[in-house]
Image 1: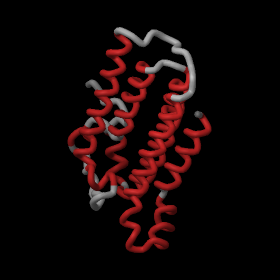
Image 2 (image 1 turned 90 degrees about the horizontal axis):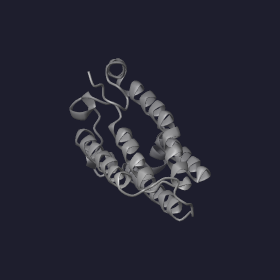
Image 3 (image 1 turned 180 degrees about the vertical axis):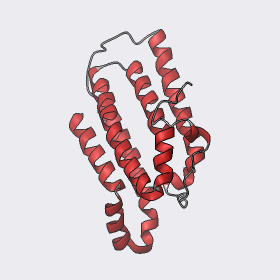
Image 4 (image 1 turned 180 degrees about the horizontal axis):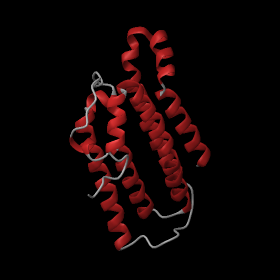
Length: 184
């Protein structure tokens, strides 16, 4: 599982890197407009394959998964999906998945007023829900791999956003928390 997640995250990061995109842009020409869609399909397929692999590795449960744990698992997962859905309102879902032009302007509206990386926040909630739903060693390994990658993903994304939006993003980064909204 660890090797699978490592390969996935390396490919995910490399394919999202600006210089790699530039290489594809030069080679693909007009067809490059489909790059984002291919990237999203690769990402979604990779995660689904890893989760399928995870679910097929035998492992006994390390804690009770009935009662409160079951309800909490569904609550965390549902709330994570809602956070991601709300984030797509700000990003523009069609542009995000490559079916339309990506937004080129910086936005700090909606959920982005409270948290810089709502998709990662939603992912954390869903992974906690996944762990509570299936609390075995393979799931714990998957959750820990995702959690270990998030700081790397945030760093790479923010480096790209600072390059793209400069001082505007640096101010935003200073004022808005990365994953957990401030309560006060």
